[in-house]
Structure formats: structure tokens, C-alpha cells
Length: 562
Image (cartoon, rainbow, N blue to C red; front, side):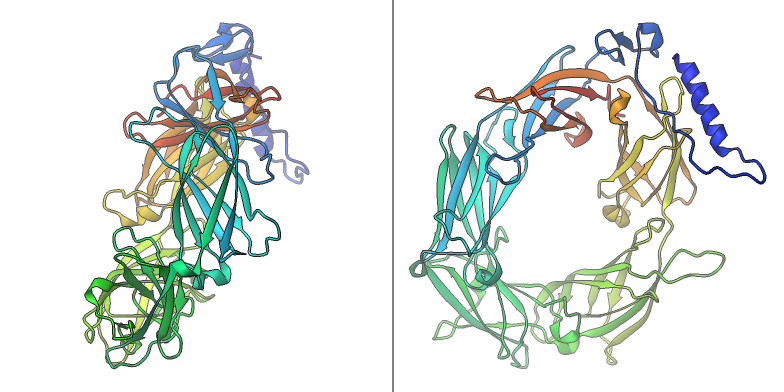
């Protein structure tokens, strides 16, 4: 069927779905026309594309000008864990270039996590270390792999995973459950060669650990109970001790590696309680400025909760017919990088998360300072609000009457069509939020993604926050078309509807195979395709495909990034 004939059928079906006859109703939806890229000769294709005779697809002959990255995830892990995704950087393709993805053999890594010989509960994260002047990635780990060791282990092995061989990994061990208060995190390095498996022992020994004791008081020397405390590296911010809470006398005991170098104390309130007694700014106190007592105990001074102020406010939905309805279940976050205590002179930061009730009201406790208020509604048609709030000392200890009216989200509407104007129905239209600032509008940092389907005439509607997005048209897998991608699409605060025509063009067809070095095919592996924008080096998702039973695959790529 020629394109114009397909277009006519689509429009007739759409009109049939919309037409109504008084006294009658449709009991079932009419069939939705499906777009299929199919040709026998080049004259069946739109301009700038040709018919590929073997696949009978209209394709673009010229290779895309962006660099291609492929993430490959095997269907299963032979060790019974989660499959490990691997990255391949293929650079800018040449026309007709086959894609050969050859992954290093996955090396089994097994080990123990013990404290004086007894198993502990811990999360163990392996992150591949990037080397200086490293060539393009080939079979590198995608992100990091985290495995758990259980304290209930009965055998000789506490954890097992597999990693691409021939690489160096940074290993970070975080004790879990009751062991968080007994043991500090550990950092190590693991060399994983190609070939044979690797055994890795994580050992804590009591003789290699020591305790740091202290007490937390306010300016009146009253003990502060229920505060969360740990020690951190003052440069990296990474935790170097166990974690605990102060007791009723304000005392704490932390466990650190023996002969630990420079460190700082990190103290914060338990904000999950959301009452004034638990309120405390997140404070970092450099231990080098402290003088321990004769018994080695540190005394830490913190602001008193007596300075806390009760904050009451209300969040409303956008005005409708002159009335404002409450916004229930809205998330209200207050953040201040600078709050101070007049008694101790300490300066810290504070972050508080609240949720509005059915009447849109919220209550929390804050200290004097300058705050950024971020409000996100659960209603998909309502936008994000970011505002400033200055909290001044008040003898009454209360700040009431804060009213926040949320904005309406902008509506992005339009159509999805082929290059010849034929509407595309059933395509998924996705706006992926990038969370970057737009024209000094801080709300853009909180923009949220949205998704919808194109209708019978290719129409779509997406409610969007202010911010920057990547727009994707994810064509049905059976369509024979690649995704259409428009990156860095900005949405301002205008209430006027936005309109966009998303035109899907003939794809570039790349063929390839995926296998391990020893020759095993990656049958059924899932592939995610990414473009590296030549202007910003940003990685943008552009498609997905699956290997067949022999590890072969066909990747349909957008001819360009818009």
C-alpha cells in the first residue's frame, strides 16, 4: 500500500471513531491503524531514503554523525545473581559498518565478609576504575554492581557476583542492620584479571578498630538525646565510622579504624520525627578544632531546640473559576544552606521534608534562617513551585499563614507523523526531565518526566513542568522505524499551549553481533542504544533492541539528533 493510501485509511478510521449518530453508541473501539515501514522499490519511500531490498525497509544510507554507545545486558547471570550490563563505545559509524560487540569473559568473584571470623551483613559495591587516557570503552561495567553479604551465612562464601575481567575495581563495604553501629565502612581495591575467578576476603578485626566517645550538649550544657552522629572524611565527605544516636545523656560511641587520620563529626536531627525536640541543622564539626578531655572524650556543642519555630502553611491548586482547592499529599521540602545559632555561634544547613494533609496544610519546625521552599504536587496537571522563605526569630515561636499556590503545568501538544505527513498512531511520546536550570528558574531543577501515546491522528498531549527535556517518540517495535529524538527542549512558564510536530524519518539500519571473547553468543541479550551529543558530550538514549538466538541484532538508529 502506497503512503498516501495508508494515510487515507488512517484518516477514514479516525473519522469513523469520532463520528456519532444520535441514539447510537460504539460498544468497542475501532481498530487503531499501525504504521509499518515496508517497501519493495525506492519509489515506495519518502525523499532522501531508499528501499533496502533484503529487509524491505525504507532507510537512510548515510550513517549518523553522532557517536554511538551500546549497553548490553545478558538475559541471565550464570551465578544466579543480577546480570551485569556492559558498555561499548563505538564512536561515529561509517556507512555499512557492522557492529561487533565482543565482551570480556565475566569473571566470578566470591568472598567473605567477617568480623573476628563471624559473618556480618553488608552491602559491597564494585565500581570499575577509569584509567588515564583510556581508549573507548569496550565491555566495561555499566555503572556499579552492588551485592549483599548476609550475617546468616552458613557456608564458606558470604557473597558472589561476576565482573568483566581485565580491570581494576574500587570496592566500598557498608555494614548493614545492627552492624552499622558496630563497624565503619571500608574501602579497598580489587584487581580482576581475565580468566580464572577471584576470591576476596573482607575482614574486620577488633584489634584493628578503636572507639571514639563523646557527648553532645547545647549552650546551656543540657544533653541532646536522639541525634544521629557519625564521622566523615573532611575532604571527600565519605563516612569513616560506624553510625549511632546519642542516648538520653547525650553520649555516643563510634567505631573507627585504628590510627585514623583527620576526621570531622557530622551531626543531624532525626527529621523523621518532625518535632522541635528532634530538630537540628546538619552540622559538621572539624575534630582538629576540638580538644578532647583527659579520658579522650569529645564534647560537641550544638544549637538548642528552644530556638525552633513552629511553621504552619497551606498549599493550594491553581485557581479554577475563582476558587482555590487544597493540594493534598503535596511534598514540601525546606532547605537552608545557612542557619545559625546565637548561643554557640555554630553555622549549619537544614533540610526538612513535609507532606500536606487532605486540607493542603503542613506543619514543621525550623530554625531562623533563609530557606528555599520546594513543593511538588501529586496531581500530574500541576506544576512545581520553588519559593524563598526568610524565618526570623519570633518570641511567640510560631510562623503562620504561609500560603503557596501551585502553577499549572504547560501543555505540550502536537502530532507525530512520518516525513510525508502521514500520522503515526500508537507511538509512545516521552519527555525525559533533565533537571537543569533554565533562565534562572530554580523550579526547572525539579522538572518531572512525562509520557503519553499518540492517538489515531497522531495527536498527543503532555503536561510538562518548567524545565529542559529530551523528547522521544518511541516507535512500536514492529514498525520498522527508529525513535525520533529532540534533545534539550526547553519549556518556559507560559500558560499558552505549546505545539510540536514530531516528524519520524527513515532510520539508519545497522547490523551487528554480541558475544563473549571465548565465542559464546549473547543470545537474547537486551541492548540499549545511546548517542553522544557532539556539542555537549551528553549521553542521550535513542533506542533499544534484542539479540536473536545467535547473538545477532539489528539496530534502527535515528538519522540525526534534532
